Amino acid sequence: MSDLHLSIAAAKPVFWTNPFRNRENAHVVPAHFDGKPIGMMAIREAHARFKRFAPLLSELFPELKATQGKIESELIPLAAMQQAMDLPTKMGRLWLKADQNLPVAGSVKARGGFHEVLEIAERIALHQGLINIGDDYRVLGQPKATNTFSSFQFAVGSTGNLGMGIGVMAAALGFRAVVHMSKEAKVWKKERLRNQGVEVIEHSGDYEKAVSLGRSLANADPLCHFVDDERSTSLFLGYSASAFHLHEQLRNRGILVNDAHPLIVYIPCGVGGAPSGIAWGLHHVFGKKNVHCYFAEPVQSPCFLIQMLSDAKSHPSVYDYGLNNCTEADGLAVPRASVLATETMRSIVAGVFTVDDSSLFRHLQLLQTAHALKIEPSAAAGFAGLPWIKDDVLACPGATHIVWATGGSLVPGHEYRKYLEWTQVI
Ligand SMILES: Cc1ncc(COP(=O)(O)O)c(C=O)c1O
Image 1 (cartoon, rainbow, N blue to C red):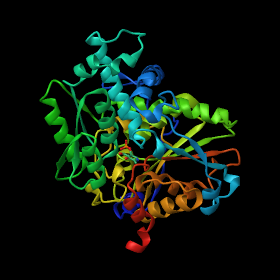
Image 2 (cartoon, helix red, strand yellow):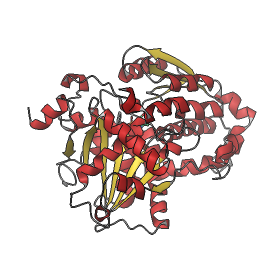
Image 3 (cartoon, helix red, strand yellow):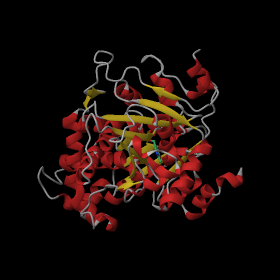
Image 4 (cartoon, rainbow, N blue to C red):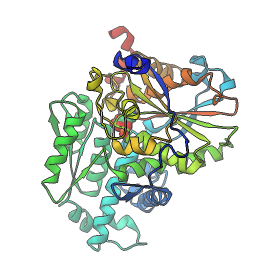
């Protein structure tokens, strides 16, 4: 066993740089997964689908009126956080991609979840003659469409945030929705889903068990679509489409991205779908030499990292390392990574680092003090990568560092106060 393996097994924070990155012949980047296209055309198509549905979404969700149905998040400068973390400006500037405030479902998982619900709704609507290509999709908010949708169901296994995205969008269009969750998942997430008319089924065991039981129950029902967090290209492309908006945001702020101005992005990783989808989109939109994506995992749940350290044939779980998969970062508490995520990222992800819970809470609290921004523990994972990269050649005055905050606006006040007081609780 190498020192790295020993540190992982001892649940110590580690930083791994991907030796296969950009080695032309090391790994051919796939253009398909499970026979479905995931290349640039497919990313553009996902982006176009969001645009087609925007007029309908702005009618269904009052909070989307102002953006005419666009579901996007701010890019926020974090000068005070950079100072509070003792990160010199000579390493570049720090920003937050504020997906914690993503409208309607308050997390990065909504990007993928919304896309998959919209894709299936569009397919059903075209098939049933409710719309034709080029129509105004607002007709899908009318009773004829919602009545049709009500005979179909979405099912998903989730740590919470994906369920929220699927549940809210499915219900708004008239579908039924079932979310399979682990008994250990956050109580407030289950309550919120139930309050929104979503059926929540609790399973003993972890997230992986909930997904697998949900999949087999759904497969028995021909009118049920199972959203597969471990293999769905539709989710993946929904995350990838975020790259277009980020491109626009950087351009509007006059921020260059090129060799001398690298874009360095830090993204929390659970099963891997969201971070790999985002990294995939960024890689296609900004070019592989200019963007460097690092994934952040809890020390007890480094499933993506251990898969990257294994050959493609094996599919290890964190339990094989003697780890317990227990962390306050509930969205990241996943024992085994998505194969779609690891296969697409093998020669793209710049590296992976692991984070202990105390570091999550320290950064969550610092962000509140420095910028009055509220995020959940999972969403704070990216910050721990900055000190590792501080002295790297990539960290230069022209660099732009983006920490992707992946959730938090829906956390109830009483729960968030516990996060702010966390060091006093233990
Ligand atoms: C807040 C938050 N951040 C990050 C993630 C990680 O996404 P993925 O599981 O697709 O890697 C999740 C997953 O649910 C999440 O809820």
